[in-house]
Length: 261
Ligand SMILES: [Zn+2]
Image 1 (tube, rainbow, N blue to C red):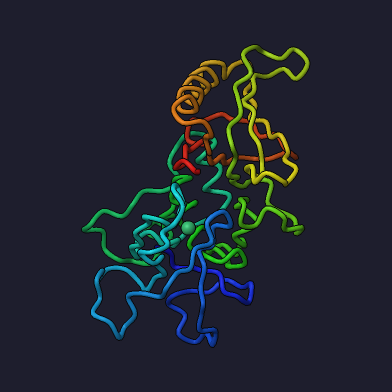
Image 2 (image 1 turned 180 degrees about the vertical axis):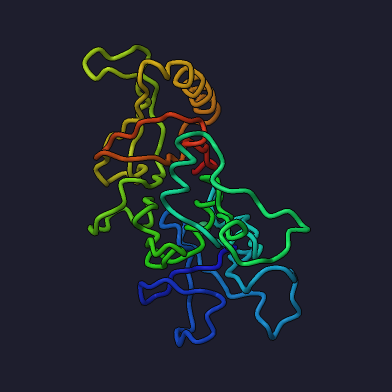
């Protein structure tokens, strides 16, 4: 299920936007999938899921492709809450391996001050889910536009500038085995955009300085073994991108995604 779907008009639409004059058909936003979706859980129906907003769902006769991000997503209000999100704080915490904010405890009084207005999206996966369920042109609370910090197949050919600090959905290729004297780093190699058979793809490199050798070896081992299971492996990588290079200093910068195809 998804909160956002593509219309025949080439635009994205929200299931809970009742002012939208477009009335279907709707399609899965994943360009590799694109199955028709129907609006569900509207106010006029008996709500199947009380705690979620209206959503789009594929039909039984034509389900999503295997591994489609929109297949089994269950949307709670909490998943779509970006209160207090700040791009700088998020990436600073991600790179240092720390937390960018604590979730409120149940008995925290709802006082609106800086202490309680903490960032609710703290991991790459949370931010990824949030971005998938919003339009590329939507703004996060700190006015950052989603496509500026989120690069994937859905928006890969946009020409507008992106934030150097952003996350990219990449296909893992392989781990360099040795320290490169030329580049003074270890490297994990990836592709973007993922293969569709006719788009020319770029090589992206995740680099580790010599003092991060331990982190490099641990991640390389994990990614190579995941890759061995079923071929293609997709990962989400967050950090500061300098063209096609990103330095990795924390395990939290890499998140292994569902398999595709
Ligand atoms: Zn789909």
